[in-house]
Each structure stands twice: as C-alpha cells, then as structure tokens.
Length: 383
Ligand code: GH3
Ligand code: MG
Ligand code: MG
Image 1 (spheres, rainbow, N blue to C red):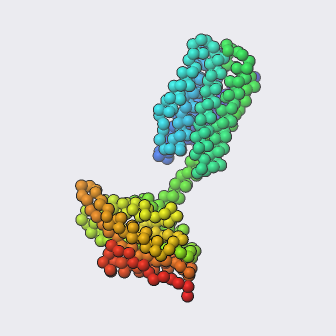
Image 2 (image 1 turned 90 degrees about the vertical axis):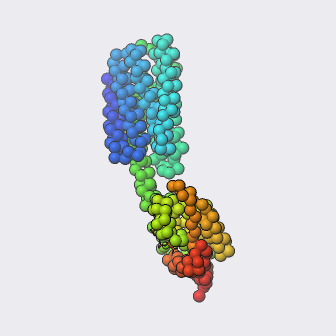
Image 3 (image 1 turned 180 degrees about the vertical axis):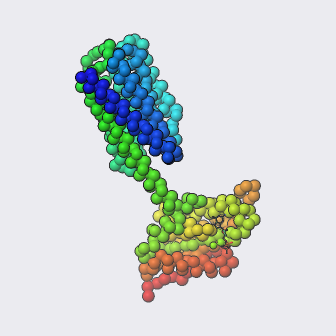
C-alpha cells in the first residue's frame, strides 16, 4: 500500500511538473498574460511539496512534515493569486503573501507542540480553504466563458473536498500524534483527485486562456485603437447586409479644417483632438446608439428607433459640446469644430450604404454652408 501511495504521489508530482513547464512555455510566448507565470510558479512549488511529502512518507519527521506543508500552502496561495490575476490582470502580491503567512502561521502551534496529527489536520483544512478560494475566483469570472470557468471552479472545489476529507478522517480518529504520514483511504483518494484535478484544471485553463485570446483578437479587429470606438469594419459588419430599420438616423461627423490642426500643432495633438471628439460623441449618445470612427477625422453614429427631432437634437448637442471644448495639450490649448450630415430611414427600407451616402451628401452641404453646423438629407419616404 505504501509503495502504491508513493507511486500515486510521484504521478501527481510528474503531472504537475509537466503542466508547470507547459504553462511556463505558454507564458514565454504570451508575456502579457502574467497569470500563466504565477500559475506555473505555484504549480512548481506544489511539485516541490509533493516530492517533500513523498520524502516525509519514507522517513517521517516533524521538520520534513513542516517543510512539505509550508510548500503546499505557499503553492496554493500562489494559485489564488494567479486566479485573481487572470481576472484582473495584476498579481495581488499582498493577498498571496497574506494567505501564505496566515495559513503557515496556523501550522506553527501544533508543530511546536509536536502534534504531527494536528499539524496535518490544520494543513489539510487550510489547503481546502485556499483551493475553494481559487475555485471561487473562476466562479466569479464565469460570464465570459461559462463552461470552462465553471468546470475549473468545480475541479478546484472537488480537490478542496478531498483535502478536507483527509483532515476529517484523521480528526475523527483522534490521532493527534501519529509519528508517520497518515495512510488511509482518504490519502489515496486525495492523490487520485489531485491527479485528475491538476491535469483537468491545467487543460481547461489553457483552453480558457486561448478562448480569451481569440475573443481579444476579434475585439481588436473591430476596435479603432486611437479612440476605442468601433471601426469602419465593425460598423459595416453590423449593418451592411440588411436594410436599415425604419426610424433609424445615420449621422456622419467630419472635423472641420482638421488638416490645419495637424499642421499648426502636430500630429500627436491632432490625435488627442480625435480622442476627445470620440469621448464627446459617446457621451452624447444613448446606450442603444452606435458610434464608430469611419477613418481619418470622420465618425458615424447610428441611432435606432428615433425621431427626426431627436436626431437633430443629438447632432446639435455633439456639435455644440465639441465646439465649446477647450483642449489643453502639450502646453497649448485649442478648440475645434465639427460638421454633421444626418439621414433617416423612414418608411422605405434602404440599404445602409444608401443612408450613409445620403448623410455624406448632407455633410457636404454642412461644409459648404460654412462648417460647424448640422445638415439633414431630405427624408426617404415610401415610393
Ligand atoms: P474639412 O473642414 O473640409 O473637413 O477640412 P479638413 O482639413 O478636415 O479635411 P481634409 O480631408 O483635407 O484633411 C483631413 C486631415 O485629417 C488630413 C489628415 O492628415 C488628417 N488625419 C487623418 N487621419 C488622422 C489621424 O489618425 N491622426 C491625425 N492626427 N490626423 C489625421
Ligand atoms: Mg474628411
Ligand atoms: Mg475634415
């Protein structure tokens, strides 16, 4: 039995080592995902724990037991940190340090009293709490990819339960001084659950990270990097292949004499003006309205279920807010204006391109009329 148990421990150790190396390799090619490194280090510490524990099984002693459990609790604290880092992007060093310090401190009194059984119970209960806390992080972050997040949370909780079971079985036997590593069914179960847990969690974590990367790439392809608004491709993807719904207003905004801003103040000031216009535009729209940067200094907005009056009001508000905005940047302050063309889809069902080119013609009139103004295309009514 002891040989079998040690073989199980070695299997946990090698599974963990393989996974730590895989995670480390993945991190090398995606350094921005720092949680992969934290996870790899956490698992590497857990692998060290497994080998220390295996040595303790072979030659029991208080020090070896303490070293093994300190490694276990430090490794699991790092996993809590890695899970939070996965959700928030930054490693909570203080949380990791605090969890490791508190859980290790709990081991000291029974270890000093020579109660190896009690030390074992406390370590396993603390491991259960840390694993549950890690699972909880994935549960909280499940909205983006529910299936793998919930599966990971479940595997962490299952592994936590196997540690708690070990603690309960030993506590129930009342053996506060054992003199060797406990050797009962719960230990073997714990090792088996750990193998399944660590490999399952590892594979699912990589899958979760991949799906997040793919989502990020899709989002990047649809976003204008300067303003954070949708780009032209995203806008056309949303509207191009179907007729525009009735009572939808489409607006085109074109910054006035923007070339002059670049020439007079430099390209980076021009970029700041574009960013600020993007903010003004977003602030003036409802949550259901859509705005995008078409390219250069041209922007568009689509207002579904609106009236011509309201569309005019919104366009006027954008125009006025932007004209009044004093942009202070790089030691200079400047003001800029915008011209707006509006078109409506009313009873007909025109294509998006048709409404957009109506808006463009109206914009042309606004420019010719002296700029810093709103012009509307005549309504497209049912023919
Ligand atoms: P109008 O009032 O007739 O619209 O005049 P305009 O100067 O705004 O129009 P024009 O089309 O002649 O110039 C647009 C300028 O926008 C030229 C280009 O250098 C600048 N531009 C385009 N994209 C960017 C950008 O991403 N950043 C900055 N800073 N400038 C840009
Ligand atoms: Mg232009
Ligand atoms: Mg312009």
